[in-house]
Length: 167
Image (tube, rainbow, N blue to C red):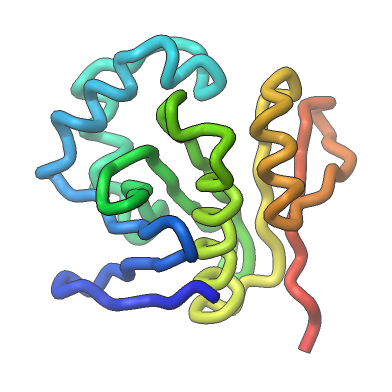
């Protein structure tokens, strides 16, 4: 079961079984800029490497509280990036990308379950969506393992959702 721990700056650290999600900070910029500059890392994340300036603007926590950004750690080492964003007070979306060598080990579904526990528990969300690239079969399977199901999309792109049980 996922557990949470608040950090000194008021953000939340999340714990899965195999992963730990820690809020990103400016200190993570070099790591994240290197990852997002790699074609292998962004192949299904827009497909275009990002500049350091773009990474700084989007992925080191500058968009809080609307978007919460996390490093995904496995055995204490950073292996990926995750974020959740609000559509309204009770729903929003998740984005997650892992380093190629961290894929296929169950880390994605584990990190996702930690995020879902926080979103449905602490934040009281009712619905979470993801929009993986259809051709990224590994990611689609990982989202399904975490409990997401495909739903119709107005754009024709793949859309998946997780609905929390009504209380």
